Amino acid sequence: MSTIQADVEARLAEAEPEVEVLLAEEVGGTTLRVFIDHPKGVSLALCERVTGHLAELRATYALEVSSPGPERPLSRPEHFRRFLGRRARIRTRGPLSGHERERKSVTGELVGADDSDVTVAAPDGIVSIPYAEIRRSNLVGE
Image 1 (tube, rainbow, N blue to C red):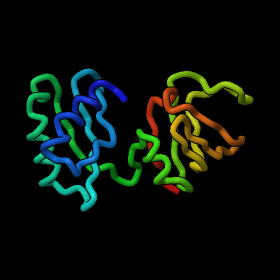
Image 2: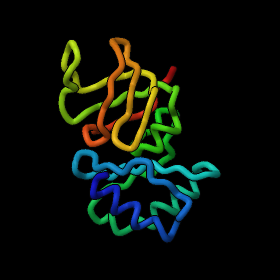
Image 3: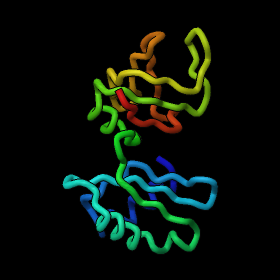
């Protein structure tokens, strides 16, 4: 988990305990993009409240708070487990080794997720990726 994500989660933990921070990422050094989810869904009012709770961060960043949408980010083992059977794109920090061609991205069906890595059925075979190697991941359309 990134430092900025941990900071955002800590700021929201007491104020909005039911809000799940799916992803908080710095974009271009000037923007903080935060994807949130809530058991009752994400409304404009909820995004506005979360923005208010993160007001101190607006001194450093332009702040974007939104719902995950259909291509929701996956950042924790429980996210991957929740969406087993769905297609996802996973981008890694370095090239994936042990395959015909080294690449930094794989797209396929999520077929397994334990506490240390996620397993994807890609067109060229089964790929197991440690969470520590994942730079970014999200669901993709069918």
